[in-house]
Length: 450
Image (cartoon, rainbow, N blue to C red):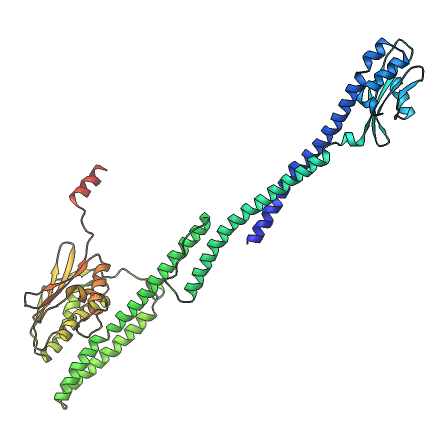
C-alpha cells in the first residue's frame, strides 16, 4: 500500500509540477527573446539623433563604434548612398523591404536575428540601422531557468512522496494492528483488541472490531453459562433418584419405592430431552420464530414443584410449610426457567442441610414485585458473598444454583438476597419485578414541569 500511495503521489505531483513548469519555462524563453530585441532596439535608437544631425561618414562611423553592439561587430548603418558602416548581417531582400515599408522589423539571419530600423532623412531614401542579435543573446538564461524549474518540480515531487509515505505509514501501521488483532482472534485469543488509531475510517473499523470481539466473548461466555445451567437442571431428578435408590436399598421389595424410582428415571429422561432441545434452539427464538413474551403463575409453579419435593421431604423426615400460594402470582418469566430456579434453590436445601431439617417456602406478592422466600432451619450460610458468586461453593457442589436464581431475578429487574431465616437457618429471597420501578418524587416533578 505504501508503494501504491507513493506512486499516486508521484503521478499527481508530477502533473501539477508540469502544469506550471512548462508555461513558466516557455514564458522565460519569450522574456529572454524580448529582452534581447529590446536591448537591440535601444542601441539602434541611440544612432537616430546622430543621423539627424550629420551625414558625415566618418562621424557616423565613430558613432557606430561607440555603441556596444557596434564595438562587438553586430551593428551596421546602411546609408542612402549605398555605403555601409559596420558589420552587416541582414539579407539584401529583407533590407530592401525595410526601406520600402519604412518600419522597424525583425528578420532571421544565420545564427540569430537582425533588427532593422529605417530612419527618414532629407534624402530620397531612408537610412537603415541594423542590429544583429545572436542566438546566445536571444536565449540567455533560458537553460538556467529550465534547470531551476526542473529542480523545483523534482523537489516538490520528493516532498509529496515523503509526505504520502508518512501518511501511508500511519495507515499501514493501523491496518497491521487490525490484521494482527483479527489473526489473534481467529487463532482463539478472544482477549486480543486493537488500539483504534489512524484515519477516521480505520478508527471506526478498529472500534467496530473491538465491539465485535467483546460481543463474541460475551456470547461465548453466555453459551458456557447456559450449558452449565442446563446441565444443572439434571441435579433435581438425580437427587430424587438418589433418595429413591437409598429407599430401595433399605427396602428392596417395596413396590412404592420401585414406582418412585421409575418416575424419577422418567423425569430424568424428560429433563435430558429438554436440555437437548434448549441447547439446539437458537438464542431468542422458538422454532425459528420470535419467542412470545414469557410469563407464568408463580404460585401454581411453586405448588406443582412442592408436590415433587414434598415426597423427598417425607422420605428425609423434613417438616415443611408453604405460605401465600393460594392466590395467583403472575411473574414475567418462563415457567421452565422459574421451575429450574425453584428446583435449584430447593435442591440446595436438601443437599446442604441434614435430614430432618424443616423448611418453609413463602410466596410474597408486592405492589411492584413478587418474592419467593426459601427459609430453612439448618446451619445457615457462613459466607453469603462467596455463596452468591458464580461457581463458588463451600459445600462441595457446583455453585451454580444461586447464580441461576440470581440471573433469573435480575432479568426482570429484581434481585437475589441471602440472610437469616425465622426458622433459625438461612433464607434465600428471589424477587421478581412485575411492574416498572416507580420514579422518585423529584423525577416526577421534573417530568411534570417538562
